[in-house]
Image 1 (tube, rainbow, N blue to C red):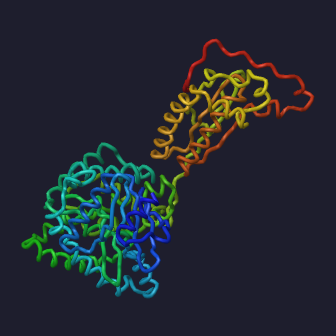
Image 2 (cartoon, rainbow, N blue to C red):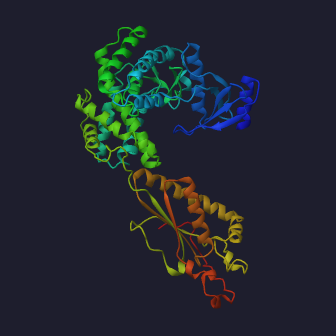
Image 3 (cartoon, rainbow, N blue to C red):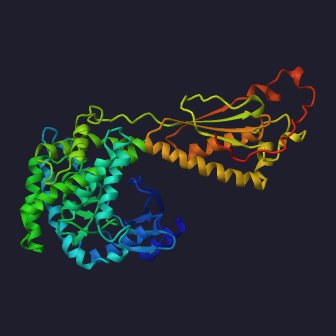
Length: 507
């Protein structure tokens, strides 16, 4: 990939970069790098694993630049490699500037120095929505061309599954789904003909020489004007006070009038409250997924401000549509002391107990007390213990690992095992479960079962960093290497194999 970046950089500047340095991730799967030349040349290299998302970003960028909107220039792209190089807009996001301004004005409810910046951003937003909406190619929009009913329900269910369930907020599933459908119908009563930036918030706006520049609009699609202004003014990370929100919303509507005359402001504000709610819910779903599920604490830091935003909506009249269960859910969230703390506590994590055992000693006990899980029978795999050079060893030792790695049936067995376990671990994390058992059995509990238990434990630690993986080898004290010397002089006789053995049985 670095060769691709060098080639694209050289195409723009006529020279190779002298350094390519990784940048901190933005929460997505993309990787970003800053390339620096030997003079003043800099550029940002992006690797995006989703080609359709990359295509949308590149297409939208070309459209926005064609009408003079402040978005980065694309210096070059290799769509097959999933990489592109763009203009370096510096390191200061709107969020960074807000954070610095708050330190300089610690007593202010909101830094006065940032108010003109917000006003300027809201002057540019209608241009993206109305003018930009006329020039973008919606056929490249990803994953959908419009913020339609399906998109709205995806956001609402994202909130349900990744915030409500992971934060253990109680709700009635049937009544909540009914409210979701009614809420979606209400939201689609707004004017949905324009471009929705989709993630219009303080980390996606750069400030260069005091002027705003815009990034991360690859999720854009056709939809309602209210969504983006709600995203900016109710961004939990920004904490814009209510009085200033009203002032800035009026300023936005004044600017919108120059691009889209005769907007019904009363009706706009009614739907605006609904889009504020759906945006807060979408953001809370993201905080839940990144914070409670992926265990990234910085995402949980925004939860208390999101709760305060919900509380303000409840205090000022909610929305003009009956949503009793959804309202009750919001009231429960606002009444939660833990969710209002500066650092909400994540629910207990998932512990996966992985172990090996011998069938001669019977099935293992359940250390977690929850029952269930998996027991995989490894006796169908050829037994290294039949060979004198392996019989004193165990599945932890390199010769045994090499022996088993070389057997085709081991690879096939492994694919089935980790496929089943990975799926269960993902579901258990999503549902907030705390315990899962996975055991491997063989004749002696020394070679094959130990090999698979260790291999699965290593795999789970890499695949699911937030999971606590514990390993137990039940027969470890009986292995020849762990016996007193007098008991290990004789060559142990390999235990006979059963005539028939199940493959991958689950208990």
